[in-house]
Image 1 (cartoon, rainbow over the protein chains, first blue to last red):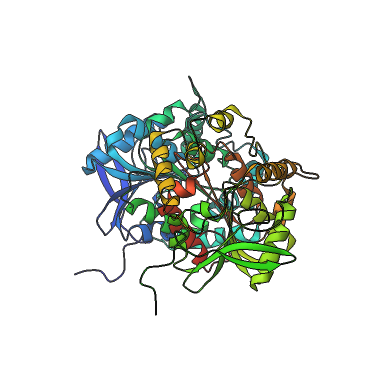
Image 2 (cartoon, each protein chain N blue to C red):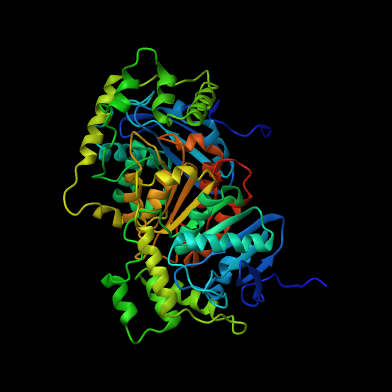
Length: 293
Length: 293
């Protein structure tokens, strides 16, 4: 009997799949004929950090697959301290699901994992959406010690999602209001939750950022090998992974459209979720070999 | 009796209107209920340089108004040697047409004129599309003496539109092929043509670029006064007005979406005309007070 309400990350059940000795937590829901879209998550985020206002409209045209990398949420194992290690887990997970080809939406740290997957096994990715992320060798990647981030992170009055609202959104009334709405949407999910990430997760992921900042050889040359159509998205006031990194991605990826949102920070995709999901749908459903859609 | 074929810049008649002692050449065509969209043209371009693949689809939703500034084409007068002077003519022209409020698509030099109009008389512009252009005080604006531009401009084998193809499009086979298709589309118009711009036009417009590069006071501070929703578009390989200028526009305009195309130069809007017109239509028809659409 068909369900009258479309699937949603508010209540999609968490599932598990075993591969290479790990048990990965994931959620998969959606309808429509597009290739599945793998979501790769940000620093310290779990399945519960995916905004239903982003996942659900996109799931109307395809399955969305939300994934907790090793050591995140209820996935077993330890968090890799390199992006390459995380990419290995993502590939093992896709293999376990039997997904030989998919689209990928990589957000922040997840965007780095997406780029690594594209380099390690090109045929598995058809199209790629890189949100608020950076190329290897990028600038000022997730330096939480910067005052603009360290101050809210150390503020004892800010907890959990309130902290996320502060650092993911720009310091304008409009962006912070969008952040509050984002938090409300996340809080709609009340059962079957993932454990919140703690210091061991943060430590390994920060180590991965530091390693990702290193580059040998010609700067950004590796991006030339990513031939897939890409959509690069950022908020113009991103304090965590500054927009200049998105400029570099668009300049060095051979086939990428760049889309930058105003009045928004790291969480631009959540702030302008109606626009973002519309743009993603148009990008993914375009039949052109070129990224423009 | 309705015409079966939609209006087109291939054969739209050139019209004339008198204001403040000048006679301005223009074309106006289209249908639909959107506010009229004023097109402001690039260095040395006339009404005949507007690609019908760009104007015509946009004209399905509104009137498009193509305009030759003073001293261009069959417009009377002399070409202003400042952007401010050109903006004054654009405003006089709108007044003569009785257009109190419109949208503006400013391309290259035309994008500078659009920014000036927005500052000189804010209420006249509802939304603005700024293509391959630069803010006042921008970087490397139309330096035709650079080898990458000077070489093709001095090549005796290149004439007219062939020269345009060379410098408006990126030096890839795909972009040059798009350039050839662009030239073919321009050549579809064979009567009621504008005279081609000569050295006096170029000299005054280059002087205007040099003046526009100057800025007093805090860099780009003037952009904060442009409150209209803006769509900023460029090709990532623009050699005439490098994409960094579009970055600065998006960073300093308070309400601008940035869209950058791959594999494209100054003529990105013509190369990816299907995408560009789709994005413009979505931007113009959005009812949000925010630029994202």
